[in-house]
Image 1 (cartoon, rainbow, N blue to C red):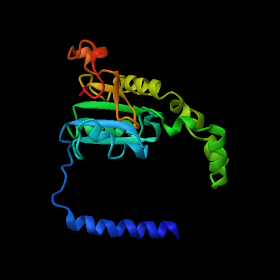
Image 2: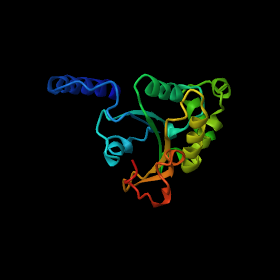
Image 3: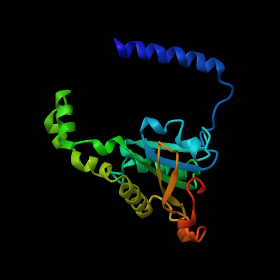
Image 4: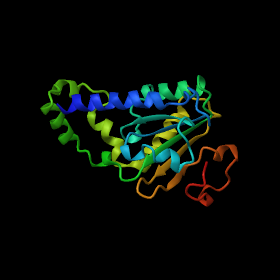
Length: 200
């Protein structure tokens, strides 16, 4: 069975990795930033180096399409912990181009779920609805801007925490600023002059 062999392979690697590990990582991010991005596998070991970040520099929060469908849900809970308990001082919401989630079709996904044994009533009972879950996937740029606005309006996140919105190209590695969290603080006067990958 494929799953069993993969589990065995992963555990064997874990044993070797533990033996070679030199030091534990800190629980707190070294650069005091938290990044909320997509779970796309192309961003693993690529997004952080493209932004000049090493493992342990930033707290990473990921979900499908870096969407915020529940302003009081898991993403916000993780951000609150990162800010208030782990001293993160800035938030980066990073979407990416060519997101596979933009190709998802609500009806096709529904049928796939039902075929795998998910009761239709469970899908119908979703709040927000399945369609609302997928809504942000069709407009990655608009989704980043929307998430930034929702986070800025959230009373659990202090107003002095800069919240930035970026779009990342997993093909070229270029990061572009959509929303500058420093603008209100006067730390950046003209975001249009900020070149890709120069923004920190």
